[in-house]
Length: 171
Ligand SMILES: [Ca+2]
Image 1 (cartoon, protein in one colour):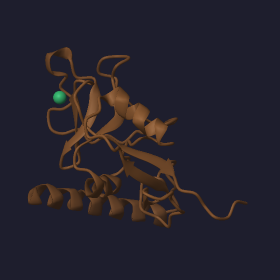
Image 2 (cartoon, helix red, strand yellow):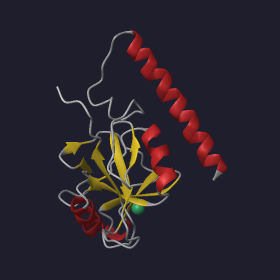
Image 3 (cartoon, helix red, strand yellow):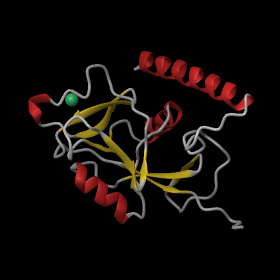
């Protein structure tokens, strides 16, 4: 596990370096601000803040993918889709294995990652994944080292749910 963390930290460092570089030349990649740690707002009790989002692990550790999606909706959130290595590292502190909001149920091989209504472009597949073993793997889970694996949607995992932070001041 130690090795995993080192690799992840190195990747995050490279990412930060790149983003600082982009920031200095005045680049603003759309959707980036929600992917990195920033000064956040406020979260409801029992939700953990990070960046401009709040996070909460489902009470049940044994949910099928669809059940996990519904559990997050019931909590007033959406199943998480990490969109950076930094966010992945934060998720690891909450829950090491978790469903994420990605599936290829509609078209085999076309992975759609959607956190609520937001499509996420970031991908963090493990080596040789997604591999659709026996043609049965259509849902994505974070299984080890923050890396994604496709598994059958009826396997049992918890999920991390997210919702936006609330700000005291509204303009
Ligand atoms: Ca797989």
